[in-house]
Image 1 (spheres, rainbow over the protein chains, first blue to last red):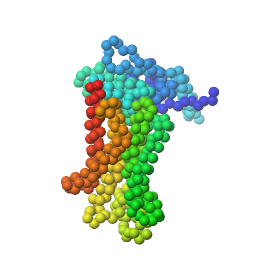
Image 2: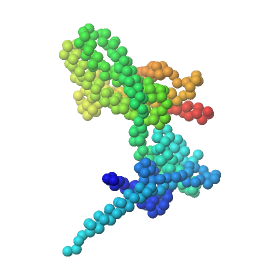
Image 3: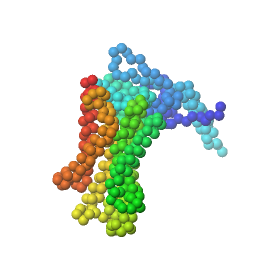
Image 4: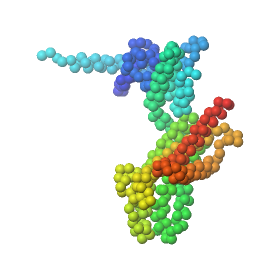
Length: 104
Length: 315
């Protein structure tokens, strides 16, 4: 295997971190948990793009009988997304450790 | 009606099923749930926030509409039809002018110099046949048809702005100089139609205007004329699209493309010249009357759209 490590945009990374910590979430819940870093108008576009890239899986929520409105969509990260996130976190911590100033 | 229902229907018209399922349906589903769970006084705020996020998502996703490709057969058919209609009609329109000239050299020059002007006049009317070429041959998903018409409209406007603003003034200039050198007319200052749109806006003092009008008024009229011609292709695309939406096998079924094109020519020129009369009679600002065809066609399209919705609702 000689493939480069896939890169996440800031929004993509935040979404995967949120889902890795919180479990399955709806789009609007991600906006609420992100404390203003994800916007309602763009989060669904990012989620759609991440599904196309294979970083997310989704399923429709089960609607109780008599419920109105469209069923919401729940998202969870794929194994690929979690592996890429872990690889980046490892690379960053390794870089941070090596970049620490050495004592005289 | 739940918020977002109509907007979702709108998204289905323009975006692919994948984009609708992955972007717009989750957005509307979350919005509707938030709205249901909110107390009544807060619902207006939730509706407004949801609307803003829908508009934002539609804007961010809009490049996908432009990237929706129509099959090559459709694209080729549209290009062939526009090119043939524009060229044939433009050449026919130059014939009466060429009959007045006695030598072959001048006829050749006339064709070169006048052809761009006549092409600019007839090109917008080729849009009627272009919509038929997109919609009436092979069954395409509606969002693909809409994307093709949208892209055609954008390209047509760019072409009209470029041709009307630069190519036609350039060819008019060539014609004027050639005629002056041949001793057929005096060598006046460049007229309004020989200056590019940029020159008319940035350096209007270069233009000579007929003595009976003010220079500013004439420049205004010329710029309005170019703007009207630039938006005309979009209006004709819209009108023909709506025309083809009518149910078949009724007395009000879509008219054949030739009849629709002739009706478009007749309607445009009737309103265009009526605009001149209104402008003079009512002492309107120069160039205002030229917008009468745009106003007239837009009104017809809006009434048509309202009528189609009403017919669908009754059906």
